[in-house]
Length: 79
Image 1 (cartoon, rainbow, N blue to C red):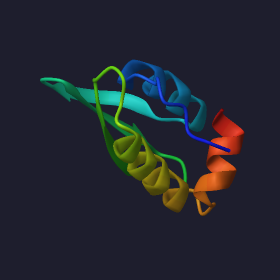
Image 2 (spheres, rainbow, N blue to C red):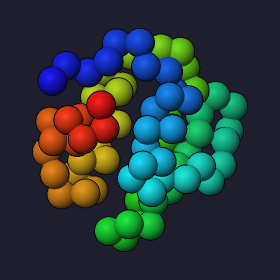
Image 3 (spheres, helix red, strand yellow):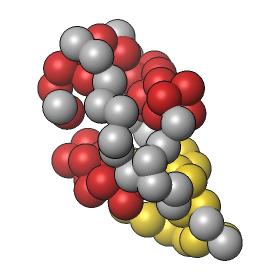
Image 4 (tube, one colour):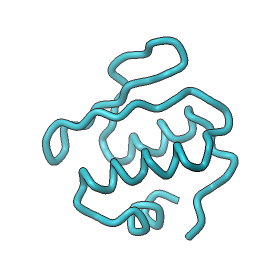
């Protein structure tokens, strides 16, 4: 499955809330999300519109690694 090309940072934050991520702080145009599932995990999301495809891919890869799944499985589950 291909990654969405027009996803904004706020859209991604809403999607990651399904996995238990909650905003913990914001500095400028970056929001830090924290999840307590499978141990504590922090991820920083740029509040850009749209997110660059490489940035989105790296974020999803990091989240998938934390949840012990492949990036493809995570993309299929979220989108």
